[in-house]
Length: 424
Image 1 (cartoon, helix red, strand yellow):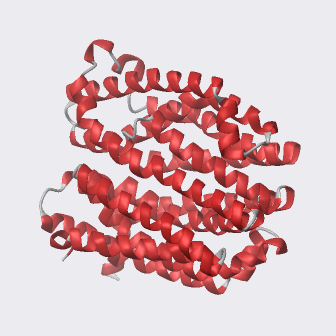
Image 2 (image 1 turned 120 degrees about the horizontal axis):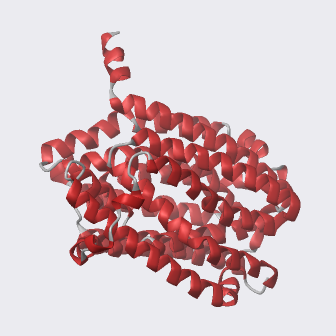
């Protein structure tokens, strides 16, 4: 009993519990949203939603210069040094304001180009990019604000922002999908994060009074230089990665059909629900800890804390999901999506490999190992892309999830060898 009491009293358990509530809520909201999408837009609409989400992921990271993990790291390191913290916040915020306004202008006047790249010849979706251009500045600022309070160790506040964002996203999605079908689903994806910015600003203002805290004379190019390595890492991972997924999906649409692409988007969507639990815990709890620890013994303890407490629960959850996959697909979507059940085994196996590798990959960001990260990430993305093309020829749509499992296994092996001193 004493052992369990000690676990319950740990900060990891408290954060995990609140995060679990947040993830369960988001999954519940995802169930509702997915069901509405399945009924009103079908597999083809699901594929278009996937294309837009990949594009937005890349755009969000470009609009923040990929500084998110760097902001967490330097805010955590300078939490008690007010002058340096003020300089970091001022420099990054001023830079992001000018960058997002510039990107908004480009996106607005090149909306037709991006519409053709993402949606093909469907000119009816041009409005989506016009609206996105107008709200884009709020995306980067929201991500920046959340990264700052994450670095300050306000884990619970970060999770509450996520909870509120999920609720806003649900309400917006229901209204727009019911009113406007496919274009409504696309507009909801674009508008919801902009509304979250207002909530985020309100909650963060209680921690830092940005109007008084940010000063133009504190702008320091040295800070941007220090953060530049994170930009390179983000360009490779969070920008190039979604474009690889976009290229794979377009390949599936061209050779297997848009419905098959919709099935892949569906299994990816299901996967994203349960991966949120792990990714949030990693970014909110484990990344700040790894950023502070310097020697291999401390790093090893963090790694094995993850493998000991988080990984077994995750694998148990995936086992339950696999045996309940038919029920899950019918509940989340419709019988039209039942072919997705054939994709579960390889997707779930790939996710186990991915989660095992994710904790190791955090070390790249925590210790700012730019070159090593870029090389391994480019290698991983190349394996994913070319193996997807190869396996889809052999196994049709199932080939893309086989390629996903193969890629994550190879990536795990590479990282285990690279971080063997910290791991073993």
